[in-house]
Length: 640
Image (cartoon, rainbow, N blue to C red; front, side, top):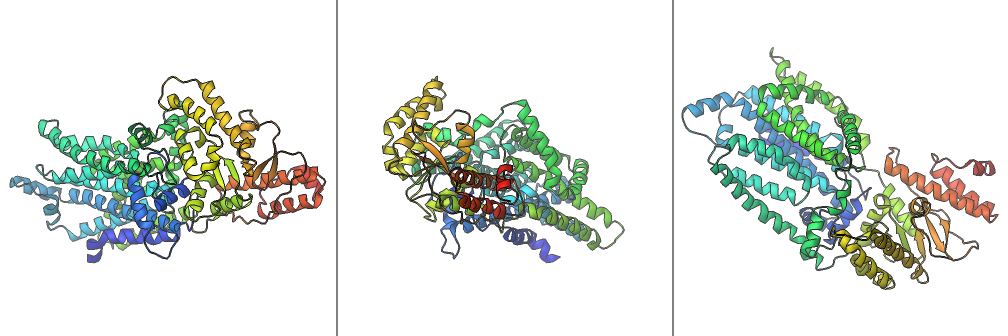
């Protein structure tokens, strides 16, 4: 037990880290993982808000001379961030429980008119039995947090939220230290300001801790002149840190890296980038959207803790309210602030925005575990009995959440991305907006692994942004040069839109349409041109996008090939292999359905030209590799 008391943070870190290694993704997974890994490896500029600290730390780590791929190292770094984050959470929890335990002794100290520091208070002799309960409670509570679904998932692959987890826990720790520190000591508040600056340089949702920070700060310092002076000192630390780290964006942008999202080389573009301007259209959209997200949060909250560990949280709510009302209010403010903000963000992958709510809720779990251990050992029974029961609950949480977060055998995004790109001819252009499924992943495979760099992938939605043409000119200069007049017209039309000035929407849309049309007509003689099925099924069917006159689409494995003939156009054999995970989710289902649909379309195309045997090849591929895809009845009757 002496070892645990001395090294409880190490125990917390290592126990969780071992689990995280088991569930670590070996390669790129969905959404932003490919882009972020490429940004780290190539020292580029990521999507808003830029994440400069994340990028620089990642670059230093993934370029270490270790015998692993860059993507594995990027994923490993995420596991390290989250593991250390749980140990900082444990330290914060112990700080709070120690403060409760020593409360009566602090009264004696106060009577002697000698205010002690946190370190001095912690050195006071305490009841060994109580200290054992505290140590076990904070270790077990940190594991409950570490095994919560969304928190755990951030450790499985490269994401900015893994570093956010570490930094927000550091912010909370130094805030709590500053709150219980002696009145005239500014050091802890300045350290808090430093951590806050680091937090804001990684993710702007760090601001969600500010309401609870204000509560503790003014509770301790009151509303007086000295309190405001101290705020001035903290801001003198906060802003230089923030400016120094965000200066990475314009410095690197002027060097025109391969991945240069937003091209933030001047003040206007810097502010647009770090404020996440292009994503604000999904923020505070409607009451209905907020209700939808709130309903999701409430229904998902028990699942985060696999329901069983939620019992600890519920017990902890009442315990902290009775024994630590100030801390209870701090946690509740943090929880409510996070939920109120996050439910107003109308996006699909909303879970990570609730992370601070789950972290704050886990403090209640620590109190709940502490209370259970305390109650069940009142009659001097062995402490092993309640601890064993709590461990069983945590093991159940592990068992329930493991299949939901486990990424150690997930290759579907890599398989799909590489197979899709490999299905195209040399020097092709792919026009798509499947960002979450292969476009983001292609950033890593092309820019870091140098996989099929002859293929140019153009994101249809990013083509709406002025900065994207700069990146296109950097990476595919000849393609951009052929449509330079159309680019110039579009840039002129989009400038007032991006500046929120008066603009002509018809002029802007027409300029955008001309860019897309010319992208095909001016390049197809040199580059085979392919269009994603999502563009055909959505924009083309709705009349929002049309091919230039005389051009046609032919289903070609994963994509539609643009051709200028109505004659038969051959395609490659479907010899690819995509490893479909047993655990289903939106992203895996999309890939399975999209590939199955395109293979069926190709089979129907072959049938159109009476090539029955070739059609059978594609249908057999669907039956073998995508058994969940429902083949149209007319084809089932032909290939029984």
